[in-house]
Length: 322
Image 1 (cartoon, rainbow, N blue to C red):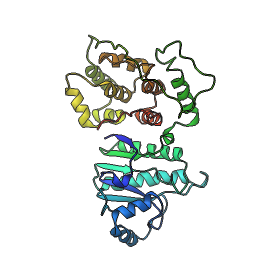
Image 2: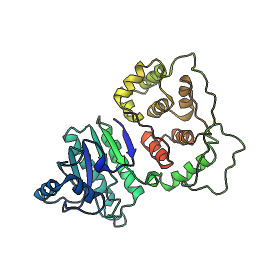
Image 3: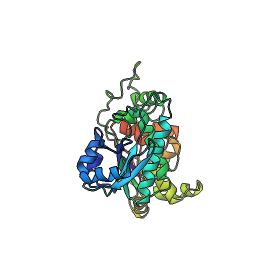
């Protein structure tokens, strides 16, 4: 099952399990932690007092009580002390333990915040990368829908070097990656991620499906050539198995975003991805910001989770298919 970024409060999210960024005493803290206790009611506090406490990097489980969620994982993240005291290792352990506890309860859905990124001071972008890595590892072997609550899209930006390259690609409208209008200038100084926007993309004539075979037929051939099974491809495309099976039987083939996700999942380089997309009558356009971001990611081979992070950072719709 896929990973989806959301901008919703986990206390209101109807997942089987939600994660509470707790303190080591398992008492109501500030911000989200206090909201969890208030929404759950007094029985939550009694249950946590019975447990006693939890060390940083660990997590414990209680019922959800008055929350929409059946269960709450209380995850104790590290206090940020500059990054030189094992904070990343502790935060990673915190996420992995939280996900493991949810899996033990057979959760079909889990909603997590960016742990330690509030009052504990962990930089949001660094916390996001740790969360993304832990969730991606979890989903490789689990059929679970995971929702990561990220209120600030800036947290999803790539690291500085990659971010500069991505900004350059977007500013240039994909020149060098896609056929972009020659009159579009590349500014000497790149605009900020916040200020950069595209006009509404013009309609671009897409080629008809190629007579040599349909998209799904060729995609399945490539899947076999690469030694992938359906589960591996679905994971790499951020697509549920149910959605994939529906596409296999659909006479019209995948829509543009579904087709792009499968190209990413197949690990195709940009030129091969464009050729496969053409079989379904789809193109990547330099006039569409999401397409430029996708082309940049395909050219670098970053995978669907990193592509989605970049899309989310730019306010674009991510590739997620439940």
